[in-house]
Image 1 (spheres, protein in one colour):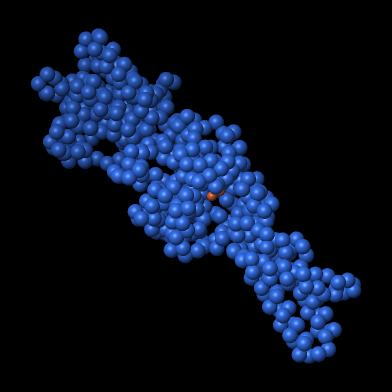
Image 2 (cartoon, helix red, strand yellow):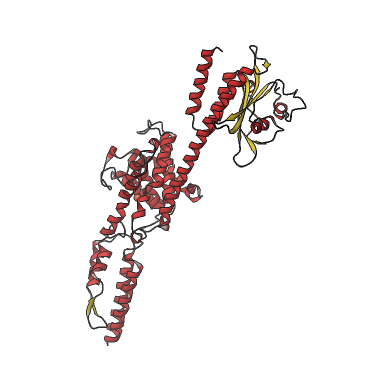
Length: 497
Ligand SMILES: [Fe+2]
Ligand SMILES: [Fe+2]
């Protein structure tokens, strides 16, 4: 190799190493590049363990064995960081070891060659160059071993002194690339852990929705991966890269973080009137009963009144549960509420106060008063505000936009901004389907009891037909085996990982 070729090759390797950020890929890349550059038959890479005095075997390749169809017989294993092995010696002393013939190592050397690989594969290791992977501060991060330098005829010959120097410098480049990739991975893990912790902290405020975001993330990811596998239909040309899938996952985990600013009584609301408010009404009905018992002389009439009071209270308690209230029911609640009795202080009072009637008849989405519902809806704006303040990297920049549109509907009937159609990102449309389905089928939600799966499937179908949810996504989710797979995963605890 002349000087120009050498510079060119080194440059190419430098760029390749610098641009690979996934650790497993990086190890294989280093091994491949070194074999290619040095024209040898094999190469192995060990990384120093962070906690134990060990070298962990990360990658290997033996070209002549691969040609014969034999892959490496070694899986991941560790060797003790000791002077007795060639790799250990290289790592501990930070020095290059150049061996002409591994079967002829002088007894004076502290290390010996381990023949187990050769014995298992029938291979013959002759020459070896073992070099430390030193970072820019001189720390040894690992060891690269080159096996059997080949001459023009493909016969093993010793590694030259010149090559030794160049490989040492390549190993340093590899060490720096490894340190960077490791740092990036550690950052990513930290990022992931923070996002998960944040999402769990919000859900801890409301035990009824625990695990909601994780499950929504699971469903969203499932739909996105399904879209990736499509070869027909509207989304056949859509492909979510690994980064885009990650972005969607984080957006799903964070979609409800705005709930942190929703008052707890709203978040935790189960029925239209709270327990203490119901207790006041029950108390009042006891007074009504007392008054009837003591003031009505006619026994028959007394029984009739008492029965009526009991059935009125039962009706009110039933209508306090979340759910639909017909005009007829509302009229009946009003009628009961307007009935009067005489209190202990002699004042005539209604069975129900105005605000109690209003809570029981004037509500939205199951059990919220209009004011409470506004507070609940605000969680999306809060989510947007919180996420807008996070300096997401460019690969994750759409997280606020995706998460912030999870209650927008295709026909513009959603909230908070009533955006419609294509203006809602595909990821948000996926998230919307996942969010609705999870909420419907969750075992316990404050404002909706879990409903049977068939009913949830039906509701999703209606929402698609009505132009609220993306019909293609709903169709895939319901008719291509996705929702069944999700429920199975959920019930076997796989969605919590
Ligand atoms: Fe939400
Ligand atoms: Fe949600």
